[in-house]
Image (cartoon, helix red, strand yellow):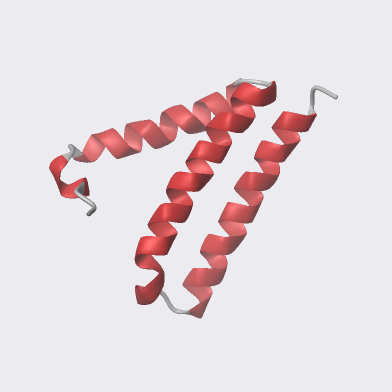
Amino acid sequence: MVFLHRIPRWTLLAAVFVLLAIGMIGSGWVAAAGLLVLAAVLAWFAYLNWPALDGSGRILRIVALVILVGFAVGRALEQF
């Protein structure tokens, strides 16, 4: 069961900013891991909200996840 209402509101926002900062400032696998964890969290929220979304909302979330995973793959491959 999901108990997001028990944690302070700022905690999730801070976690998103930290993961995004790791992904944008870091390099290589560390940055890719931060972005992939962020993508997993956002995919989880998209899954939770999926029944309440219309078609454009679903497409927007899928496009955002594809872009985020694309950035993660780019960060992972920049070593090579």
